Image (cartoon, rainbow, N blue to C red; front, side, top):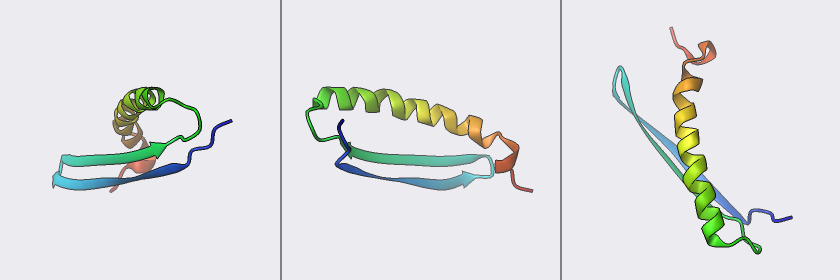
Length: 67
């Protein structure tokens, strides 16, 4: 078992217009242990784009809509 030794990040959302928002997602993780950096980097390169594709789908859900 490897526990993540460092996990830091933030979301920044900037409204550009009524129909447009700039989203910045910054994440830094260090799994530590014996996981090679190339494996951790590969995981980040696939998981972050998947997350960004999921955001519009989540925002389309009724519970996220404003009047």
